[in-house]
Image (cartoon, rainbow, N blue to C red; front, top):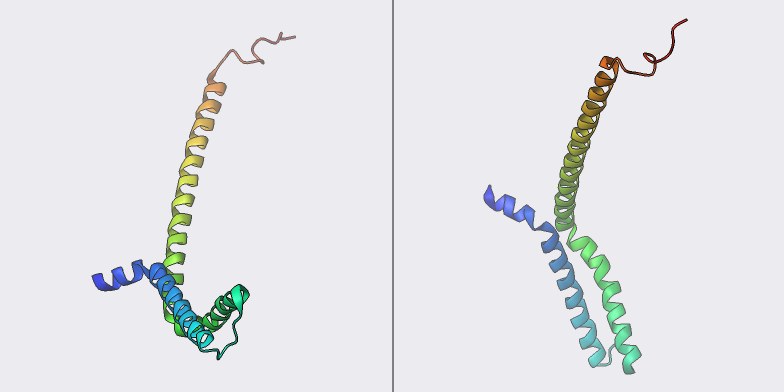
Length: 124
């Protein structure tokens, strides 16, 4: 069970590192193809083109190959967001309860006070 917990706790790091690895693998293949002139490359613009080509090729590969890791990452992130949402809601509820208690205490003190504005008005 602890291996399952540790596996889920680093899902974002695992997905990101695998995504970068897929990109670097595609970049390596594209650079090799460019080196042997299978893909025509000329100058600095050609190298930028190879990087862009590697990014375009790696995107669908990552989408297909890393779907399980992406789902694990999604579960991890949504769990964190739910935890933050729950903590925020409880903090807001406790702050509202404190404010209500202060308001109730002030109202109770105001109704018990005989020196209010109605007590100083003359009676006819």
